Amino acid sequence: MSVHRNKRALVVLSGGQDSTTCLYWAVREFGAGAVETLTFDYQQRHRIELACARAVAHQANVPHVVLPIDTFAALGGNALTGTLPVATQPDPTTGLPNTFVPGRNLIFLSFAAAFAYPRGIQHLVTGVTQTDYSGYPDCRESTLQSLEQTLRLGMEYEITIHAPLLHLSKGEIVRLAETLGALPAMALTHTCYEGCRPPCGVCPACRIRAKGFADVGIPDPLLQQVC
Picture 1 (cartoon, rainbow, N blue to C red):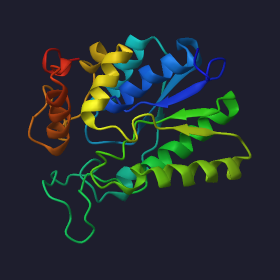
Picture 2: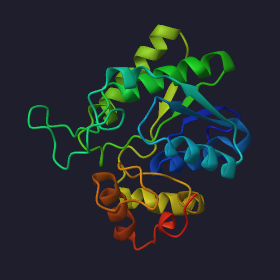
Picture 3: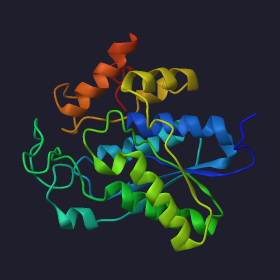
């Protein structure tokens, strides 16, 4: 039996491959009746993410809430909330891709903690991965550890951030999804930075996803079915 049984978890669900794998991980670790999902409507360019998150939560039979936060769109300056085309190379000044939304994971997890607090939920689950993190500084283990401590101090609440994919490659994540029985749900997910379904296959997100499935010799269910 998992050490997390009889506890409750909140999964930050984007509708993508990684957060969907984390949802099924949380169901295994905490039990289906102890898991809820939270999706952020941050006025992201590709609204299909919201529909896919809803479909994934429905398939997993877990509660799902969409929380609106539109400040990122007002801030602009990136390819996921504004009109910038997705760049194929990092910014030469920052070394980061223009799909980086500054502070996004920090704010998402802070809102998730605030959502969890009145509901007595002490475990947050996020799909960030350091191995394939594309240079995003808010996907590093040190960032998550620091944020967890800050949330505990600032809320006087024993919140724990779980990042089960943190040190896994995309291929290892696919294998984990297979073990968890999450592969059928992958047909409902969205990854493409261009917002395409079927995926464009050429943007950085599509290439990383395709490589992960190819590395372990498993066909991507998304290419077989479109939600």
